[in-house]
Image (tube, rainbow, N blue to C red; front, side):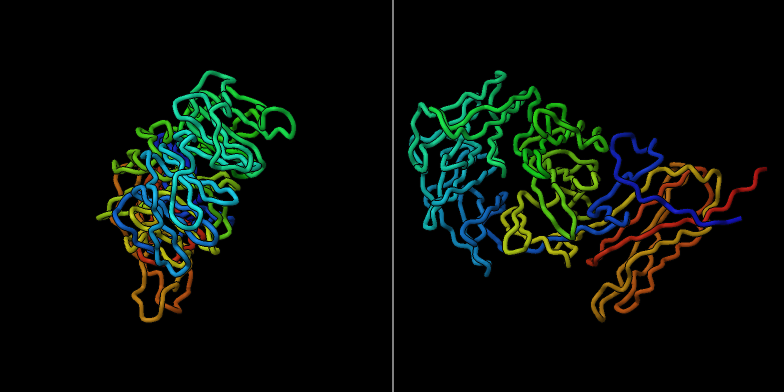
Length: 464
């Protein structure tokens, strides 16, 4: 007797070879599992400002305006999107631009001299300050690490331009070169190297302004992945794990994608950013130069840290998945901005293209074997339909199957409804017979997608 069986929309698991995956999902791209355990499409990107050149753009804000750094230059951008080049002294060093602010200035470091912007044009912070990749501000002090050493420097109190060579701390609980630093929302200084992490706090009294509260033996492999979020810190450690650090302990949050992270072949400029969108809280983890599973450059993960679930973000060029086109993120004016290549992009929940290019939403199940030797008489999809403008062509939902891990069937395409056609069920009909089943679905039209449920009608094959 034929009966319908639910396909479990499980979390993404990349920690085993796909051929041996029996549960969970083998791919979740440009979407995420929502709180109802269905698939929601991730928002797309639209152009906000086109800047000169096509170099990566790094974002921050200053006194109500968006700030963009690109090709050593700094741009101030108000709400109208008209960018003003405010470069006096270029931002040099060749590294990712890191920002922090005092009461007087926005500060920037990228491996060269520390640069400040106080509303007119950029200038040198101080000839006495060290060249640095990371800066921070806490309790009236400006901090800067000295790359390739175990030292970090600080300015005089409430004097951002005054730096004494003796105002230096040795982060040497374990001999290690400093590669990163952040000042946390809890007035703490976190300095990191490949083999160690040290936490400092302000010292209200005494001859030094800070004291080391603790050190750990766990280091940070990719310093720009260090982020303060969810009442702790996240980073990629020396074991290539994405870990949450609380106190002197770290807990891996990347077990589901462990093999994928171990296979990353290029960690240069890997970075993280946190964003809250569509009622969800995410951390973006991108390795911009890594070779992804499609053998193109750029691998971007999306981590829902409340639900502890992962998915992937991709761009699409000539039908081939590429790096998701972001280098940085900033929330301002209640909007979501992404630094692209020579552009400031905006993450828009009603758009599902990436700067005019196709955004492909794709999902793929494990090899399901719990039904036994069966024929599939029908595949039934429950999905949001009719979410298009009047007089627009009906978008399409594609589905295909792989039986016994042999080869994919041809894509079958079903209409997701013209405007007003909100009937929420798609039926795909018979799919053949097999002992194991894998399904893959895809949407490329510029529409929101809420994939609620997938069921298959199975009937046991007669034994000869």
